[in-house]
Length: 353
Image (cartoon, rainbow, N blue to C red; front, side, top):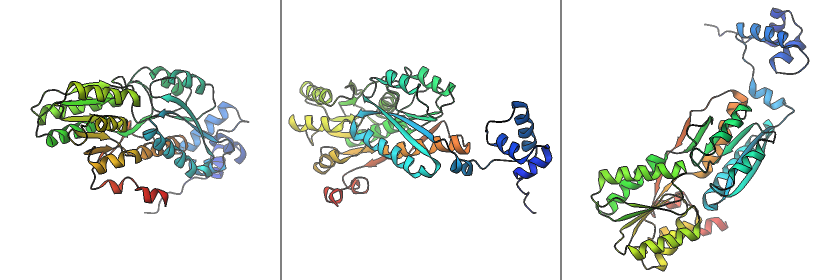
């Protein structure tokens, strides 16, 4: 069967009775024609099965597509990689006149409202956001969407908002995986502590719930105690040192955020390094020596670079190609230990090279 020929602008002009120039303006949303004429032409085009080549149109667009992002500076271990993925994806789309506009807050959960209010005044086409609270920023997200600015969240989510999609590792599964690993490491015994940034952050809350769910299934020890450190390195260090002093029988620590170096320093300074089983989150240069020395026994890699990269691609495809992404784009969590970390993090020699 011969495939049906795609109608051209000339075909639509003949069928609608309008000039090629008028049809071109209608199909590409340009000024110079009335709303009634535009609708007549679009109706004719639809009846003929016409679908515009949006990618080709993007290549000839005069006005750039501005993709904005709001990232925390800290913890830089994680967000530097998210930011790098964002910039690399934008660079790959330079031929389509995609431009970045990045704004920053000092830490997750602090200063987002003011930064988002300022971004609402900018001319942007899409936004990548790390929401520092599971619901507090929903009203801002909805305002962007009302302005036809789609929002994709990374690292964590804002359920209940009108965001277009979320790109991250399923936090419940992440926590479940860590809980099962910890139960096996400890032979089902405890006690265990969980170090987290804030339970107001959806990602952190879900990781804790996932861990507790697994621990209940696979362990016989007491329920782990949860400690919040507000993503502050000094506070994470002090909290860990205090917990170790008050619970010298502590058997395990699950670090549900990227704030693991501070926890590891506290373990070493307190003389507990290697004695307490530690499962952390993510993987970066500062963690390598702790994995090599056995201070960290396993970590759950969340690929922050890919989160930033795929968020940009999802926005671009939605804005330019009309492809609607899934509500959640879950990346796969990867268990990294000393024996396989070389596949996920470069050695010092490789970094120098």
